[in-house]
Length: 152
Image 1 (cartoon, rainbow, N blue to C red):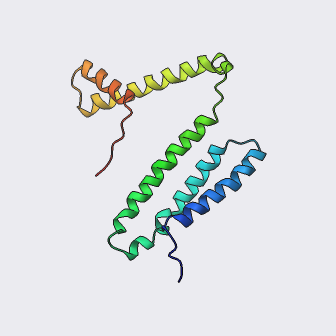
Image 2: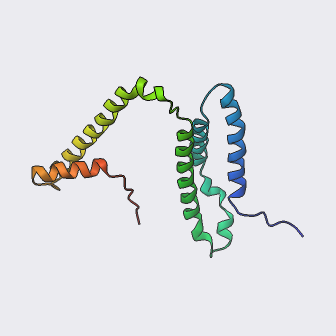
């Protein structure tokens, strides 16, 4: 007999979820949003190096190459869950825009303007853009794009 132990990520992930549940209960008591607890626990777990918990991958060379993609997938899932939780905790009542609409508009347009100026400056000073229209276009494309670059 004897058990196999399951997937190597079950124990650390289970520990993180139990910790999240306990800390979320404490956060509710002090009226703090749950997604902040999830974010803090994710930062702590990431800082401790969850990939070191994947030692069973070292036993079988055929699946050793899965360790990094598994951790990367967990990071992506964590980011999606954090965004999901933060969206759930937003107050989207009708009074939200009447109270904060002006400041939200100013901050949003300010962010676009500052990003456009920085990217335009980078484009012109690096030599990527030689004309003014090219510099303006480069700045706008970099500012308004939402793509993600992946290395190798």
